[in-house]
Image (cartoon, rainbow, N blue to C red; front, side, top):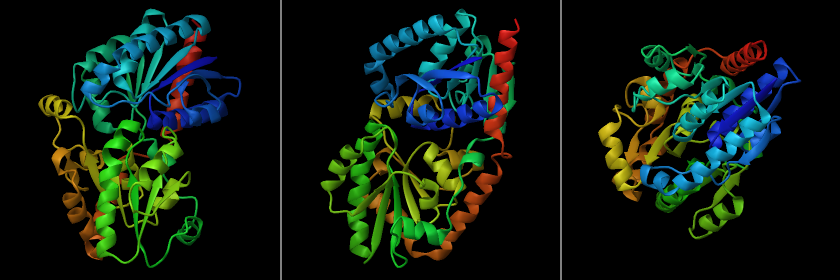
Length: 380
């Protein structure tokens, strides 16, 4: 059996790696290849295109990159024709993967979409496209599955993969020692994103806010888990420009989350990860004014952050666009650092978010769906 993957950014690489491992456990003879990153490669996927410099955000930024995406899609089509995979697994990255799913459909290759387009948030018409070109949708939210059923898509709610993935491997005492954390310090986690564009946009204001927080607290430690799509040397050079002592970490991020007091995070999967670790988080979201303006017109949501969307209310504060400022960040973070009741209250709310994400075993259920599709294709 040959399975082709298409993941376009760091979070997709993480999910793809988990599924690849589960597939290998189902059947060690399964051949896996496709577009992804280092985690998928470590999980046994032969990488035909590395996603390291692929991630872009925003409508304006995507338009500028269109020629590159057209070329990449043609390249992956050639791979499909040559390799003849039994299933194409599309992971997130909808602007690109929906077009790739159409290519696979035209070539007679079944498509499973995992971390599917958020038709419940915006662009609901994509449900019609998914119905036409995608064989199976593995849905990670119950409300998402319902949205796809309205378009008569073949969809199965598998639960959220983070339920399986997000958990510490150390005790708090072990994590404190491992990361060199000082018990008396206020510990702040910085998660500026996995795309270079996000990092450039958000890290500077995070560090400037850190300088202000250091003026009001004698002992503050900052930690920044490096996304594997960002070069360490680039991060170090960026941080060096500010007088903020940041420890760049490479692994055990969930162990790190459990010993931090608060997190500053770019909007995205990271906020759901911190929610599941019950780490009080302030969400930062900043894109070009044109991208934001268009988004306001077409997005059918009252919140940006996934924890808030899952909860149906604001559980973590959201600072958007012009509110991504030093004053706003400091004023939002200070109560979470200084008031234990406020901090613990948010942790309790985040526990409720985790409970809504379903039972464990999502990754194994996805792997089984892929494997079953592959067997059907082979037996045709």
